[in-house]
Image (tube, rainbow, N blue to C red; front, top):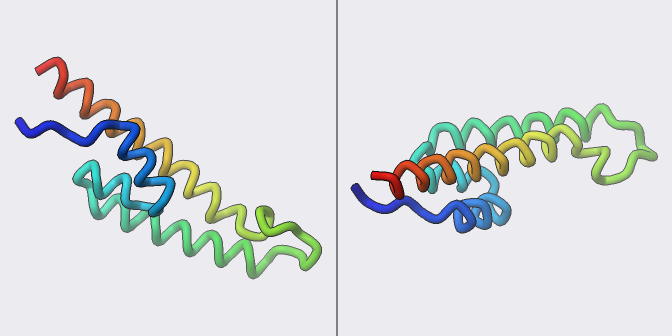
Length: 87
């Protein structure tokens, strides 16, 4: 069995390129879905936010999905790495 990427490398990749952590975990469709919902919810909250809201508040929906994708990519990479170590 080929060694998976180290979980920290997957997390760093996911921070720099949203959705790529899932691609590194060999789940490209999952990464595409995360990216789609990041853009969708970011655009939705930007469109519906009041003008005086900060930049973080304006794109809160997209940032929320981004944060979930980071945790998901790291968790799956850590699980795959630990299973590989035990095998």
